[in-house]
Amino acid sequence: MKHRGYYGSFGGAFLPEILIPTFDELVAAYENARNDPAFWNQYQQLMAEYSGRPTPLTFAANLTRHFGGAKIYIKREDLNHTGAHKANNVMGQGLLVQKMGKKRVIAETGAGQHGAACATMAAKFGFDCTIYMGEKDVMRQRPNVFWMEQLGAQVVPVTDGTKILKDAINQTFRDWVTHMDTTHYVLGTACGPHPFPEMVAWFQSIIGKEARQQILEQEGRLPHKVYACVGGGSNALGLFSGFMDDPVDLVGVEAGGKGIDTGQHAARLSSEDASPGIAQGYKTFFLQDNDGQMKETHSISAGLDYVGVSPILAHMHEIKKARFESATDTEVVDALKLTIKTEGIIPALESAHAFAGAFREASDLSGDQIIIINQSGRGDKDIFTVAEALNDPEWKTFIQKKAAQYHA
Ligand SMILES: *Cc1c(COP(=O)(O)O)cnc(C)c1O
Image (cartoon, rainbow, N blue to C red; front, top):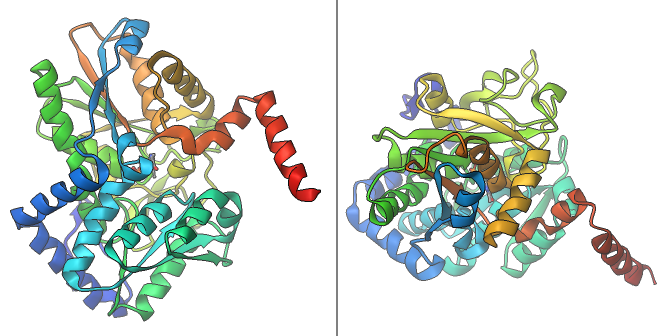
């Protein structure tokens, strides 16, 4: 059976036989939606009413002055309902599930951000919802687990393998195989088998469509460069898609972790450490060893800590349609601190990678050049990680006192 969804040699749909009819049904529903302007209107309307779209394009006057180079604009995906661009994807898939007449959604989650977004969508649409999460992540991410359960989702800790995201993905596919008739798998990023990369990128293209129109309204011209962080690649593809046919430099920033030379990072396209392979139903660059075993990745931001990457971005990398850089944990925390102090905006640690990448290049540009940074999410969720990274003494005392309360 031949499936669409190749980007050069990347992508595809490597599926167990039993799932093929379900994927055919999904591809058909997606293609119907894609060819129906009324669907996109309905989606836009939903995102306007429920998620506050269009999100603003904010001119960062203070950062611009600080670097003395290009004019810096920030696309504010942090202002979405639930605090990140993930809302675009889950609400879009929710509409599609409704069209397919299914009543149950399942999803994988690592840090819990996608799980919480998916549980929110399920509550809104009235779907049953099961979220698979590695047991280790369940323990590390109690606040998100708490909210998913309050939203009515069942959170299932996955005890297989290394008990993290990739194990949760496998478990979600196993659930899907046994409940295909009633259930849709809401994949969280522009990865996985066709049609997920294309479909998720399509829902996220709302970011780029808005950003292009907004910069033309606000400045009367296109930006020179646009920056986005790259985990699975969905927020980057969302922004890039607005400028695909323009002479705009598309820059993706991956997690450089503790530094590329330490091996503790998640740089798949911006390092030499990843190689093409097939896993989790699709072909892309994976951080894997010579035997095809997935390597351990590291990033200060949970959302960028992933072994694979969108096959669409892998292809854009190969044909040099986009450029990929990395930013280390230290650079990211510095970029975060600067943005908070100068603009009063708290980017998510993930998004702060895009800021770090842009800050490195902003002063080399001239004052008549424009850059746009995608702020994929808001940073208040990262208080535990950031306070620890900054070694804040008052915070430590606070946490110790809280813990002591429960021991008493
Ligand atoms: C999940 C997440 C990401 C990474 O996902 P992409 O698919 O690469 O966009 C980036 N930023 C935030 C705020 C996230 O929650």
